[in-house]
Image (cartoon, rainbow over all chains, first blue to last red; front, side, top):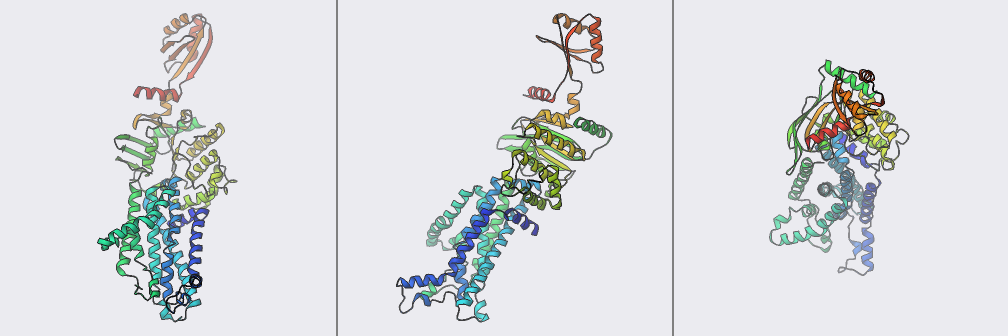
Length: 267
Length: 315
């Protein structure tokens, strides 16, 4: 596995476009997640108030809330990482290097595993980044910093890892299936932001349980929105087991489909 | 040098049982109803420079794609070194099919590093193969800045990276200038002399004639000829003769005892002798008959003519 990840690393290491896309992701993510207080201050200047509470009083970076808040925000930006993955897989197709890799002695399974392995690594990097960022913001702003408060909901970080990883493998599947980078990016974007929300809303009305199995909905169910709690509403502040199982099943299915697709295809 | 190698190869082949490198049995490939390959069978033995010939769309690249496992076969079997195919064997095969294929944004060295990692060979080989194809100085430039000749040479370097026993070259001189063609041709013979087996497709038959030991001809996915280049070209010397009176010349030549064929053209006479006889004897005979030739030339039949004849008879 190490060798397979190294292969993918050698391919991407000197590829500027890839790192620009990944860099944009980390910049935007870091910027948004560390400036929550500024956003709240902006809202306050606009005169937004809830009874006697001012927005800046909201403890968004306090332990243990910070984990869920930041990982929830991060899920909106994972599409940037997906662009990077789509570019990398569709390039292999347009340069025909995917065929040459197989000719040179990589099995089709190895090829998929080298991509998936790299995705794991990238997701790990991303999760580590979010972990450090949350820790930093927490220590900076939080009024409580005892171990119990810090570690209480830290499982949102592994949940975020699973979410990003699965979404990236989904993007890999889309890129492998459609072959063209532009088409894949547009379709992934349209599906994630338009098609599935509409589909989900229709299904949700009548068949609630089906909606939970939709690719994006399943991912979103991992980390539910934490913000209603600041409006004194009940929220789910844990990661549900069934949500984890559904996403894990998706991940396995996506990897399997990638392999089947490649195995059946004449390159 | 090339012809010497072919002679040498056939000498060994006659006297030894050479190991089978590739054995293809009844290979089939269909795209819907169209048959791209129709029960193709062939054997390639150790040390051969094997030419795979045929017009465009005859199934050459499909065959290479199948034996390298990037195209799925519809039927039949093939064996590398007597074993069923696997990706571990491919690490020991150097192959480039169709155009040179590399990551355009990576340099030659970076590209070869990817290949070395795939083939599990030491990166030290990279400098060696770059030297062999004369790309050492440009090795750090991005692949996309290379000329076609350099790209072809990098392909060969990449194919040689694992010091493979078998080399598969698909149109290796495509798009090269005459000097480049000569360079690549010399390289091929040089590689063959190291004892490697080479499978080559080319539409430049002159080239196949110069380097190959054996060849097959494909047409519409079917094997229509298989044999050694030597046999194909043997005993096919034609003699071109001219004299003041062509009719008379024709009559006299016809009377010559070892004549095999004679053909009177508008400006000259074409004759073929039995293989045992020599041209001097014919000339002696004609002098004895009082004929003064104004033109005498022997023409060796070339593979191109032979190839076109084979195709024509199977059309």
